[in-house]
Amino acid sequence: MSTPTSDKIWRYMTLSKLISLLSSKAIYFACPSQFADPYEGFYPASHMRAFEPILQKAIDDSREARNKLASLFPYADLSNVDNALATQIAEMRESVEKSRLKFGVSCWHQNNFESEAMWRLYSTSEPLIAIESTITRLHNSMTSGKKVTIDNVRYIDFENDPIETGHKHYGLFLKRKSFDHEREVRATILLHEVGKGELVKYVLEQLIYRIHISPFSPSHFADAVRISCAEISKLICQSTLFAKPPAPFNLR
Image (cartoon, rainbow, N blue to C red; front, side):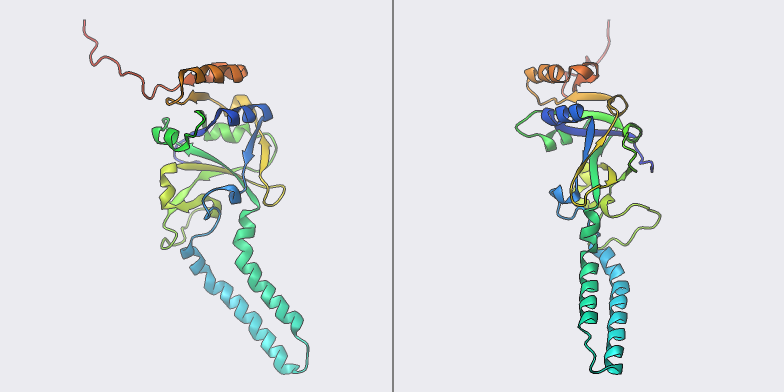
């Protein structure tokens, strides 16, 4: 596991998703194809352009070998060779799509403080809660024995930025600069079934440090959260993001 710069992470979600998380004792790792961003798991165009000459040379070498066969055996049926070449080209084009479908992703927001922007971004018709945890807790809470890779998402210019050096994790850990407000940390696994998200068991006491109730929620929502999540009621707190500030001076 690599070590991102900030250890504290957050997961903003609805109460229904929290109940599902608690009842299943499992974190859902979604296939990237389930995300709204169509670029999830794809390499930047600038990176593709860097790899293209290498792939094109492999195709050209195959074509050259095919043409030599045709010149040596002018009456030979080379349809199988032609089909193999077409398959080679198709597989190169589809390799990134196939690769990204092999992995599952769990997304977390990296921040030393709760984020007003994240509360608003994930707000729906249903009030939210936020799980406060740490990268260390997330990593240590996994009990399935699966290899879990955790790292920062790096936000780059997909059209122009060159290939980075010194990074082990690519593909799923690259996003466009338009999403850098997310400050995302990701946990990834190799899926048991290609293209299908997967639940991974965790130890609740190790994962969750605190559960915050949205500052935008109605007053009765806090009661609903505590009743629904009675087993961890001691971890639940109301966000004080918009609490009245203290007196300016402690004068007597």
